[in-house]
Amino acid sequence: MAGRRRRSARKPLWAKILVATGAFLMVVAGGAVVYANVMFDKVNDAAQQACLLDDCTAYQPGEEVTGPLNFLLVGSDMRKDWSAAQSDSIMILHVNADLSAANIVSIPRDLEVTIPDCGNGAPCDDKINAAFSVGGTDMKKAVSSLAATLTDLTGVKFDGAAMINFGGFEDVVELLGGVELCVPFDMDLEHPKDADGNKPHVKKGCREYEPKLALGIVRERYAYDYDNPNWDPKYGVGDYGRQRMQQHFIKQLLKKAKAEGYMTNVFKVGELIDKIGDQILLDLKGRQVTDLAFALTDIDASKLTTLKVPSDSVKENEIWYVRTLPEHEKAAESLYKAIRDDDLATWTLENPDWVNKTG
Image (cartoon, rainbow, N blue to C red):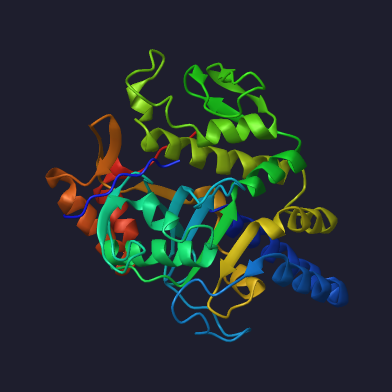
């Protein structure tokens, strides 16, 4: 690899919400067609849609959805004072051929890759998060660059993409009145600092958290480090630890949403859509949101299998990288092939060490 550049880098929630929303709307349609049609329009119009990928008009609204499917999911944090967006969460959602099961492959944002175009028409080697930052504050360019980099790395072509601003996650937690998170060890968080710049401290254990602190826990990665005396290696270092917490957060969020009726009460479904719709940017290649939601109703979101890219953390010149080392190359290549060939069920059984266990 040549042309290395250093940059200080500063779940899938939308799909699960849409699966639940779609299932509910199908029930509503049986007894209240007019209201259901209003809700269809509400869901389809709620999220911002843009052409983020190649061939973004490949399908027509209402066209049958067939599998397998691969979606790029990005959790970002856009701030007014930033010159470029940051991708705190990068995932590939793979849905199998008969649309009955799904897997999520988490991509460490510190994964070192070759970016096909680093903004000057030339490739460079950097963390994959930098591929997103290439777009600056242009979300279309950011997602497009990230998708191209992942396709170059894995050979996987995407059937759609979704980006959610992390403010959307915070809004959902606020709507639900908090979320219970199980912190694996004592942590000093980078965010949210108080007026004097002091870091919040959270204790090991399970408890309910308010939106800003919950988001701080989900975004934290520096606590998962050898320098933290409270760190427990079994929870992973750096991005690996944060991936586990992000997946735990998504499952806890779904659990709370279900308990509060946001997956079964028509009025609450509408309230949820209103709350986060403007925080989501979608490219479904011409499909409507409800087309996809109906197609995925057989998937049990609580049974999604979450996978890690075979790799390891390496510290170089005080900077952490995630690299696919020689001993990981066979497993990594077979993972990418399994996504392309729709054979992740077999890969998961053969590679249990790379299955994330959350909770």
